[in-house]
Length: 125
Image (cartoon, rainbow, N blue to C red):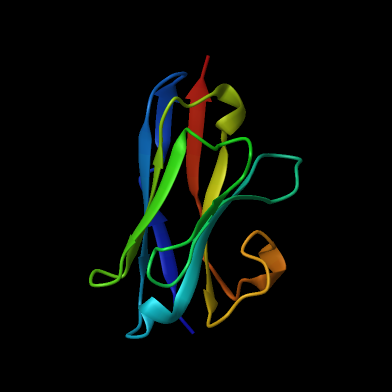
């Protein structure tokens, strides 16, 4: 099972940008569907973005479409979430998740086997 760890969170003003990275262990990284979820205090964990094995297919939550991009580098075992035009409502802990092999729904958190500890993103108004 792959292990993942996030980095890159922080405090940013509304309209700013942040780049989150997820580093994964293991030699079969290219067989994992990778995703980002987020969770704000008192709310349920929600889907943000996902990318399939070789980056050919991506999926985004409606709330982040046009502002966030997701990419992966299988040679470096990393996934990057580029977040632009950030809004206060983007404030949350962002978690990286991994699913090995084929997946039923890229947006369903129950599909993901491995989770990181999360990184805090705070957007001030």
